[in-house]
Length: 168
Image (tube, rainbow, N blue to C red; front, side, top):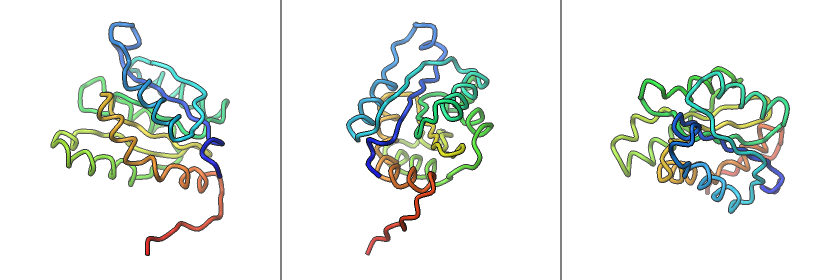
């Protein structure tokens, strides 16, 4: 399946960004990165660090709009308001632990503070949801880690029967 057949939405989670007190740089960067990889961006929003709003947006995008790939940026750290992973976990059917593990492993090679990131990947119905850090650089680097696996993941989530290709 061609990547351009997959729809994608980006949600920036930021109290200051939602109030217009800080320019969102990670959301636009991620949209650019995804479009360059031939994903079709169909929505983008900025929401405050409120788990209920995060959950509502994910549910709407999956259940009503049938968006294939949902990327969140922000709220994955250890600050008291960082609750994006908990909000995501509350609406997914199952988690894909390798997504978060791969992002943290690659990021740890760059900075020791990567161990504090709690982003995850999971599936709701036929949609893949991935939490990325909020900084533009970390979001860009983390998406680059998982991006090559996303078309195959989406094909499998949607019931594709093509076998995984093993490295020889």
